Each structure stands twice: as structure tokens, then as C-alpha cells.
Image (cartoon, rainbow, N blue to C red; front, side, top):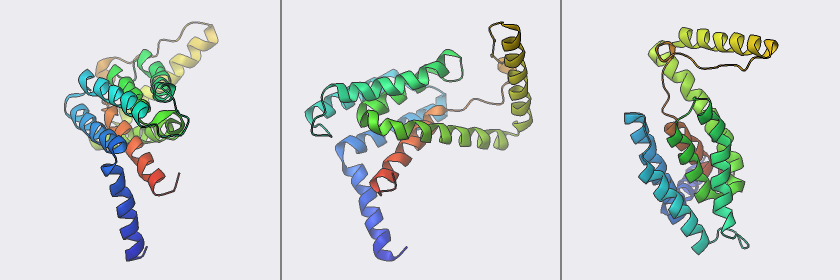
Length: 196
């Protein structure tokens, strides 16, 4: 990459931060990631203010010519609905689900199609990194094997599988707000640079 190409890429990325919609989203995501990393909680005031900002801003300044009030609401619903099952089975916190809904309210449903898988990839990579750093990879593999056996045999017998692991047997808790921030910001940057 030449110096002029690097300079152009930097200018494109700086436009993300200077734009009110994406700049505010990046600020909220970084704030949520830092708080989640430190306390394993994402405050309601942060996600609710982000949702409100996304709805109001996108109604006042529609990102698409024919976008209506439904555009941010559809994005919010998409983020909420996709992550809600993970909360219901106990693998994700409610703050993570609300944070993803906040992202959807700001960027809308079409961009969520990219953000959701990128966030899941970031979450998987962070999970692997976390267990390697903590030295709990063996425990994670034993838990996955136990969950698979339990789920498989319960499914064969027609019983409803109980896929919960005891708290002491956990390989570690991932602050998923970090993964959401990485996935969403990576999408914004890739989209701004024309890769997605």
C-alpha cells in the first residue's frame, strides 16, 4: 500500500468518527466494551440512550431516501431477536442483547446482516483467546463434550435437554460487549473502506 493509499484510507476512517451517527455509535460501543470488561455489566442508561439516539437521529436524518421510522426499529428488533435466544439459554447477559439492539437502532437492518456474523466471529475468537490466556482450554473442551453428550442423549430419549453448566465448572466469562464493539466497528471500517 502506497503512502497516498494509506492516507486516503486514514481519511475515510476518520470520517466514521466525525460523522454524528457512526461517531456516536463508536463512542457508545467503546464505552460499553470498557465497562463490560471491567464489571461484566452493560448499564441500561448507556444502551437506552443509544437506542433513543438511533431512533431520533435516523428519523431526523434518514440514511436512505425512503427510510421511515420503521428503519431504526427494524434494526433494533433484528439485533434483539437474534441474540435473545442466547440470553434465554443463559449463554449471554441481558445487557449484551440490549447492546446489540442499540447497534441495530443506529445502523439499521441491512447493516445488521453483516454486523451479527462479524460479532459472533469476534466472540468466538475472543473466547478462544480468553481460555488460552487463562489456561482453561481443557476445561472448556470437557464442558463442550459434556454438553454435547447430555444434549445428544436427552434428544435421543425425547427428554428436554438441560444444557446448563455449574458456575464452578465454567472456563471463564467473556465480556461479550467487547465482541459486539469489535464486530460492529470492524463492519463500519470495512464498509467505509469499500470491502463490504
